[in-house]
Length: 234
Image 1 (cartoon, rainbow, N blue to C red):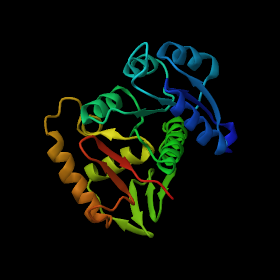
Image 2: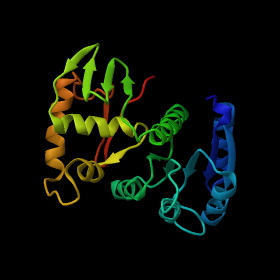
Image 3: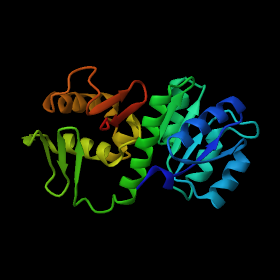
């Protein structure tokens, strides 16, 4: 699918940021509509039906978190938060409410476009998430969902059941930052009290087995204090 078929709704009240985003996105072939309030953004969601929302949290009428809460009641459109708020609690709250990713202002153009592409991939993966019959590819890693096998350069990697489940969950949500709490719920259930430490131990084992050294973002990216996301092909 070519870029010009993707529609992006920008909800931002700062005119200079709006102009910058519109220029960057249209230059890269996306269709863009800009709204300056939470209320108008919600209204435009219904009429424009975007493929992606880029959302500021500091809106003049309501907090952008209210937009996420409202939309996530009935809609799964990817939401990329673009905010001056850099506190980890704000990031975790936005992601737990249903945002797919979070970028702190000021931002780099290349990073923004990489996150946009990843979020749009997340939409396609989510739409086809029902049957795990296919394969996932990232660089030289392949995940065969039907066989529950992970291979690097064609060589099978021996993972425990839990380690595989973690990697599978991340791969099915490519382009989305999964908070520590959301991963724990998906893997161990809502009543598990093992906490982040158990997840970190399993993640360290996964990294070791797939040959990912500390600081290497080729396969798994650690959003410090927030969660993890799967990497993307350059």
